[in-house]
Amino acid sequence: MTNKLTKKLAVFDIDGTILDSRERMARELVWTAEQLGVNTDYNIALANYNKWSKFMEVYNITKSDFFNVKGQGKTWKESLESKEARLYKDTLPCLEELSQRGIILATLTKSKPEYTWEKINYFGLEKYFGDRVAISDVKSSSKLEDAKKLVSQVGLENISKAYFIGDQTGDVTIAPEIGQEFSVNPNGIWINREYSGTPQELINFTQINSLEELSKIILSN
Image (cartoon, rainbow, N blue to C red; front, top):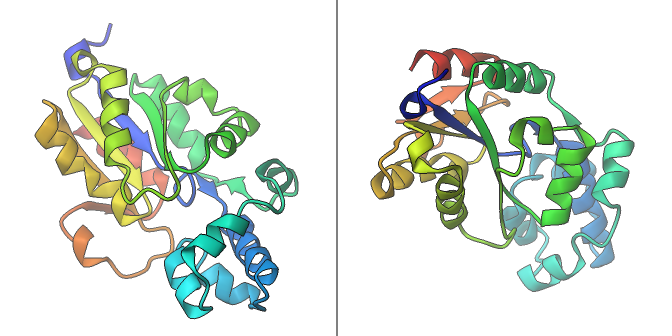
């Protein structure tokens, strides 16, 4: 039996980390802009699919107008069924290996709860995450408070190390703050799937280009 004090927790972001939702999010940006009377190009939307603030600035769309319209178009279920969002090929092998090796898996995302559960249920990810799902409001500036709740929910007596894996700066930089608050050894891991330059805030964090690299890091540390 695995010693409770040596168990590890791996917390995954969803979009851009385990789920390739670029097409879905880009099409949603185009639709939202069109509803607000702005014609945009799909390729521009694709380049800014996870940079909503920049997109709004480019097209002079106010934050209130953007969020009042966004989410009223195609549902996530419809996008999943039409393959506009799909799991990355390395997702299931990674989750399966970590699960089999006794790593506690969880997810932490910024979204609406119904959207998150549609994704989890559609791909059968509840098998890996169970109820260890933390969802920050999409308008929230940080995932930190929800990360704290998630670590408390899992139980500090159950884990010695916590890994926070994501494709955005905020997914990763919460790790040290968790370490300061709890007696857990934290590690932030940035997944740079697009091989883009490393943001200044992440130069001291672990960087990977696919989840194929993750198991080795977690299982060897």
